[in-house]
Length: 477
Image (cartoon, rainbow, N blue to C red; front, side, top):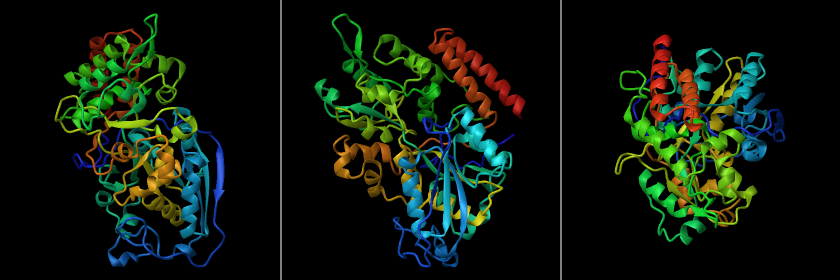
């Protein structure tokens, strides 16, 4: 049995599966290195904690090594984010402190095939640092000995997982193999022009799913023939996104009950899946079956005005290029029951920084990984993802994502963006138990598609899903 060390429900924790990192080139390789220097600027990092170049013996966290200017080496970095999505800027800033470390990066597509290619490159010794996404992919890598144990290095740098990133859940056999430093925030993106035209008033700062779907009914527009011209809303286009609503209520271990058994006979799963099917049948939500059939994306139909709202998590990096002709605002992810804790309110880490166990220059690789997980984690926002580092200076984010606050305000409600997209210090879902996780996730996708395509009823699909998920758990123990 593989079981992560339990911390319980913390302020910043992890989602089980990656969202929306695909679509990048699979073989974009770049090199970044500043001119060779013998000195680097001193001073504090952006966070009001720890200092640049603090010696480990001081007791302060060390984010930038005291001898950074003299460290040498080459780091081969695999990421799902293209250069324009923060990677180039990250490396440029890293080289301001570590001018003699060369960082070469390759962009892989975060898909099934893309992750196979990454694993192949790792086994061939061609990867030093990687961004690895989701519990499924990440746990497979650490349990198969592909990631460096960074426990002693973290201790030497006074870096405590809970203090720095909000959780020590993501460890394996008492060792730390990843920095749980990036993630996503889930929210409702809203076409504010349509919202205002519909007379819906102030965008709520909390709401239930029933209240959100009522707004979708009001926002739905039909043409003279009675056909839907504008859908009131949409789920995110990923197959299993309906289960995130169960995460919102449960707070921990969505697939399992308290004893570690399959939990798909929990009434909340029927409630949520039926709700999505009913909203699509009514015509107030765009059909996810269509997304899956033609590979369209929820963000595209939102940005072109087809959907007035959408559940989103990575919208940010697409806004400027799409140049929508309306203003975007944001609302929190809805809750299933009024006044319950919303474990989808905060940044849910699912982007892990790791060093390969066979890294060519381990010290240089660790220095870059540490920088990416701390000071450089702000560049996650340029890719539409988020940072879980507690030292984050959120004042940088609008500049990174839009160029400036003034430019951002051409497109978005910046106050709502700060509250629901940056989403600092809010409660978030966690996972500390992953027995048969990959198998169960595949089953969720399979049975969700049966329901969405009308091949099975919600009741029948969940009954079979429960049976097969439990079998997978039993087989894995």
